[in-house]
Length: 227
Image 1 (cartoon, rainbow, N blue to C red):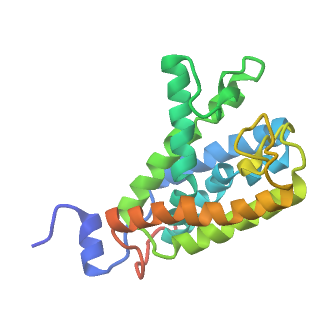
Image 2 (image 1 turned 120 degrees about the vertical axis):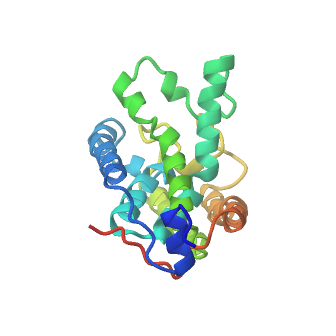
Image 3 (image 1 turned 90 degrees about the vertical axis):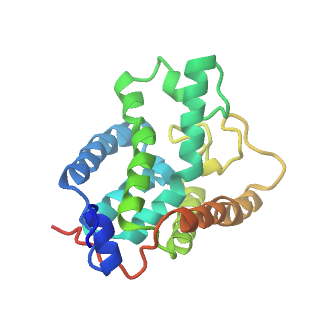
C-alpha cells in the first residue's frame, strides 16, 4: 500500500526524487541577483571566497541541476558557521552582547540597511538545506567534496586577501579567530596549514557523521530537478 508521502514513495522504489520546487529555485536566484552586485560594490570580489557566500552559488547550482551531492556538501559548509552567526545575532538582540564577535557589521549604523538586510540569508539558507536533505537525502561523498572546496577557497583567499581589515574582512578566519586582531602564534603560512586541516577534520567530519545518521542516503538516487 502506497504511503501518503510521494517523496518517501519515490525513495522506497528507488525512483527519481522530486525536483526542487520552482519557487524555491527562483527565490535563491533572486537573492543572489541582489547579493552579487551589492557585495561586489561594497566588499569587493574577495567576499565571495567566504564559505557561506560561496555556499549560495553552489546551492543554487545544486537546486537547478538537481545535484544532491552539492546540496549535501553545502550543508556541511554552513552548519557550524551559520549556527554561530545566528547565535551571535540573537545574543546581541536579546542580551546586548556578541557571543562570537562575528556579526558586529549587522549592527553598524554606518552601513546601508539594505546591505545588512541581505545578509539575512544566513537565517534561511540552513533551513533550506535541511529541507532539501530531507527531500533528497544526504550524499556520503559530501565530506570529500566540501573538503576540496574549502581548501580551494582558503588557498584562493591566501593568494588574494592580504589585510583582515579590508572590506571583505577576515575571510574564513585566514588571519586568526578574532577578526580585529590577527593571530601571532604562527607564521601566516603555517596558520593556513592549520586551517587546511582544521576545517575538514574538526568541523566537517563531525557534522558528516551526524548527517549520515539523521538523514536518508542520497547515493544512487536520481533527481528530477532539471526543468
